[in-house]
Length: 431
Image 1 (cartoon, rainbow, N blue to C red):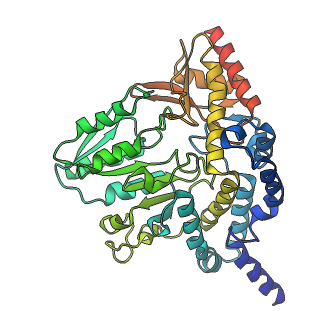
Image 2 (image 1 turned 90 degrees about the horizontal axis):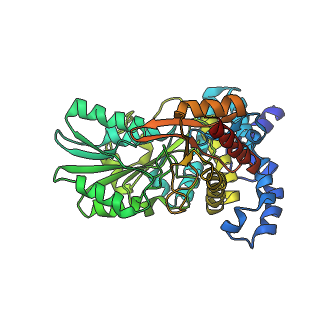
Image 3 (image 1 turned 45 degrees about the horizontal axis):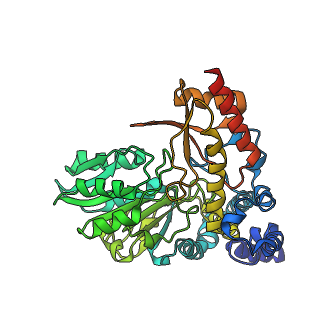
């Protein structure tokens, strides 16, 4: 009986990643506190090139020792070791008796997690729902808004495919008009992009679907300017933030949108299969939930979390990812990852036959950059990098974008990027 009481006490303590009993506190807090004190005086731009600091961060990821160099973090990022351990720990606890430990213990940690996600996003916890990925978050809004036959939605052919397919399905079933723009990226003039959306608006336009950071080549879109322009004409904006939350230093409400969805398993490095939906408080009641429980017109953001039985260990592991992220700091992370992108891309663009398809202006890109080699398709280049150099990237061929996407993370070493540059030199010289 004493052992059982001790276990339950420990289980209760483990629920919160934001307590003194968190795994981050156990594994990293002391060392990182000393590290922070040592470099407190350095600005994020200076810290971006401090290899002693980032060597410690790299040690927190098992992926830093992978025999394959992972440069497709824009697809899904590996979790830090502490996050992996948290998920395993919570999973072990849950399997002591799932119906008790999941619903009576782990499920009780959601409100603290909601508050922590909202704090990072600079928004009200009552505007944040926790789910499984950007697709689920954004499709909740896409399918949940009341639109009528003939109502227009403006998007782009360079938005994420799942989002485009969802809008096309609504067009097929309900007769809404889904209009798509196409851009010749990279673009280093916000006015060109804003004006394209402005010209597409008609008296029937109800909503603009906007990608914050374009998945294919890393273009950062002028979301605030587009939102202000749209709102001036009574048009709502839904923002795909899959590649921005947990990387770029911004507050969600400051983007100016009405709806925002993101995946937490990208640059936040949360467990795979975790996401977040944000809706302005006054808009929550008008969005129908995908899975209904109770009042579908409720103004309670929790109505979007009725997913049935889910992976509570994954959900609670998000908390440790937040601890890891917050100990680094968003602006510091943003500047480091941008530095890593510039580090390889500036060298690669000087190689004959190699082309960079992403702006290297800090205002227009951060982590993602596209590269191509004359004479090779994206798939051929990706295959060469993987088979000969053990470098994992992502081949892209969407509309007028044809490239290999390279996306480093904070655990990426400069030596990994040197290897990429050398590989590009050799491949280009042999074509």
